[in-house]
Length: 272
View 1 (cartoon, rainbow, N blue to C red):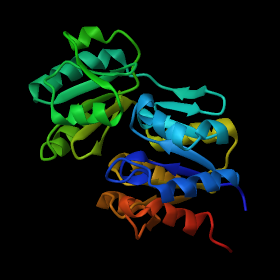
View 2: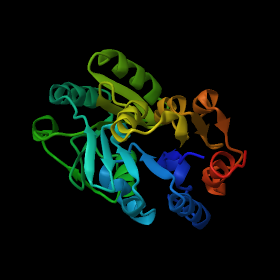
View 3: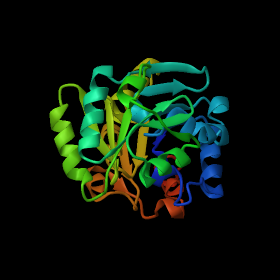
């Protein structure tokens, strides 16, 4: 059997509701790496937000990979090489900032180990900063402050309002940005053409891997592209219905019940 590439979303997939990797899931992931299979972390999180996962799963030792910022940065942890990176078009930041202010949305981006914002702070921003072990910092004149390269901007809105705002923003910037929700309250804005599937394709072309050896597992809207791209696309039982609709398989177990272990048993350890 060829070695497999197990592509894992983080929140709602790899981690449980407490944002932890359970002992059972951890042991299963170490075991498959010891047998030569590879892990690819594919997350909307910034790079600092997955460092603990990289360390825990020993991705540097076993030669794992990661897609951060929904694929705007692709990293080979064995070599430390950035295989691919795409940066946010700077000219879009000021009008998006004005749009966020006009619609009472939150807007953040990332500066090193800090989450920065120029709109009013909200619980969604605080959740994002805490989730990624980063400081949340307010900056004055946000649009002019961002003079450095960033990989994405993230917008926050109530789950009731977010779907309509997402659609309007996606239409407004259809020729410049990829805009979609990752959670009911998060609207991701990425450089055009960046999504998890596109970046996986770049990764596999760079390392000479075969897409037929891939299994992608996720639960959220931003996982749909990679679930459709992989040879086997899996949605967690706790995932969004729209994601289940495009998946080849929906787990019987949730992320709180070691659903990843179920996937490993079915698609990596299964005989015949």
